[in-house]
Each structure stands twice: as C-alpha cells, then as structure tokens.
Image (cartoon, rainbow, N blue to C red):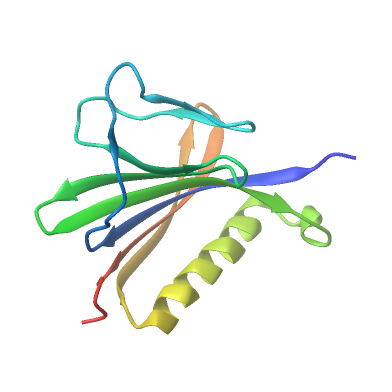
Length: 135
C-alpha cells in the first residue's frame, strides 16, 4: 500500500528559546532523515535547535537580536480520506491548523502562505510572525 506524505516547511518569528543549539557549519549542514533530507546554508548563523528522529522533525533557528527566526521541517503522514486530496489542499489543511493554533494563543502578528517550485518539485510554505509573550 502506497503511503502519501507531505513535507512541510514553516518559518516562524518568535521570542528566544532556551534549548541547547548546535551551530550549522560546512561539516554538519546536510540533514538526513528517514524520508527526506535537506541542506542548510552553512556559516550563516543557522543553528540546529532540535531533531526529533521518531517524529521526523527538525527545528533550526537564526537569531536577530531579540528576535528569532525558527524553521521546522517535518514529515506528515496522510491517511484516508485525505489521500485523494491534491498536494495544495493537503498543505492548506496543515497550514490552517497551524495558523488557527497561533491565533488561539493570541500571538499571531502576520501570516503569509506561499508555494515555491524548485527542480520541478512544489514546496508549500507558511511564514508567520508571532509575539513570544502574546503582546
């Protein structure tokens, strides 16, 4: 049975995190997960915040003074009846869940959803700005 999956990239602007971080250099910028891989630009301030192997999720951060850009890459399994949905509809469904979660927390400042094509592959993105303290 063929399993459909959706790889999502989320960019988030939030307050500071307190987890240990690993600097991304030329020797550790290739991130390999069981069902996807990607290359992080090396020596540009990106740091590996967390890697969750069992869930196939990777968090990266880049600091800008008191602000932080956080990216999350992860694999999302697609179950019936969503297997018949288009990739865009699946992406919109996942992005709406994330957006509504941030809205419920009262921290959403701005949101933009987009679609990028790289090497004949479509990537669905969501970038949002949120306040760490809800203010």
